[in-house]
Amino acid sequence: MADENTTGQGNQPEAVLAPETTNADVTGQAPPRRGRGGGAGGPGGNRGGRDGGRGRRDDRRPRDDDGGEELIEKLVHINRVSKTVKGGKRFGFAALVVVGDGKGRAGFGHGKAREVPEAISKATAAAKKSMIRVPLRDGRTLHHDGRGHFGAGLVTVRSAPAGTGIIAGGPMRAVFESLGVADVVTKSNGTSNPYNMIRATFEALGEQTSPKSVAQRRGKKVSDLIKRGGASDRAAEAEAAAVTE
Image (cartoon, rainbow, N blue to C red; front, side):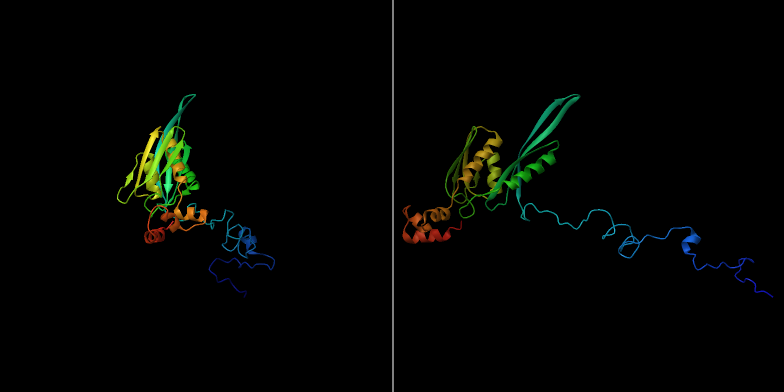
């Protein structure tokens, strides 16, 4: 008697695959494509290149504009302008920002945009690029008096003893607070335009010099310069040793 099928699926004979027949022929599905990594489409099993995808690589380091230092940002002025177009008015904003590290470096910038946050960010980026270094005496006040002039604005800055504070108003106060000056006396004459006042203030700060730079330029010692002011030798030596910048 012939052998009967005992698989429990009826009396049909069991299917046997031919040597040339593959699973794809039976199921009707195409075999998976293999990439260069040996797997289907790469190491991760997906189609793509080396990182398993066709997108851009995200392992790039973010750019750090300010070098990782903490800056003091002061918003001085925001101006809203409008342009009349067909169908109504189109508004824009202009921002004036002052930035500084509180240790003798400061700068200002101006930015325009359709929205206030974008205008402030543009002005801040411009201020970071235009920062200048101002020498400070004892890290709290200016070394000497100065005058700055821009347009119709005329400002005067004067050094002050400890405890005086920042005697300045409006845009000039923002400059000295971001600069790190604790004692200063200022006066603004002429225009009250914040743009001209800021530019005149930075012109006055740009003319500031330190005793070390003057002594180096003239080929002398700091104590020699202090002696010419009427100080004794011992006092001149002590004051010259206290000069840090």
